[in-house]
Length: 265
Image 1: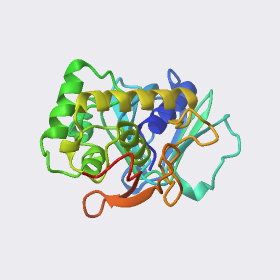
Image 2: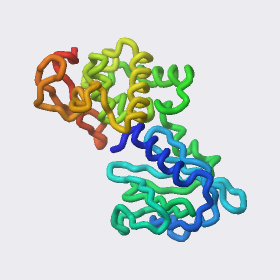
Image 3: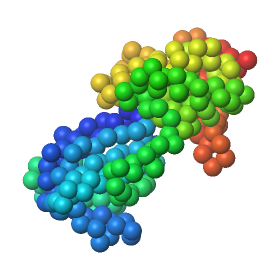
């Protein structure tokens, strides 16, 4: 599943193509919106909260609406010149937004819904503070409070829980825990300074936004410390990287760690 930085890059791509544009056509290929026509709507911008995309529109009659999409595991948004060939099969398209500047096609989107912009809180209000959002002191304090509310919880499970803090996925879980020397299968209490930890994760996400890919080691040939490096030697100490499962039932994810650099106890 795309992580917070990848979703934000998707939103920026949509903004470059559509922000300020009037839609010349639309096609919402999901049953509940099959008869909805967004032609004539002005696209304001695409905002994000964690892994949620919020494309804000103003309809010709002045009504503000938000097109809410989520990539889930397989979804993507692609942008092409008007009328150009799509970079994917038509039967995988779930949303098509056309303008004089570009066509944006949402392929295999896991979620598509349209709602009044004033009601966005109904779909993202339950989420924790967004690591790629404004991130005020209040956001930091709220995220820390949510993280430590259940100190016995498995750290990796807590960090992947978007209601605790939004934007962390399996890459940033594994890499941030390695950088801080904590084991993702250990308890939340193993995290000695949660505020500092979350601040560092935010910096890592911002760096990935600039480079377009995660490079946590500083070496593009070996860009990550532990993510998907199970059974390979740790780049720091040579110990064999391990992999394990974290997450609540039905939402299990694989994570990675070095047992020497990140002891579980």
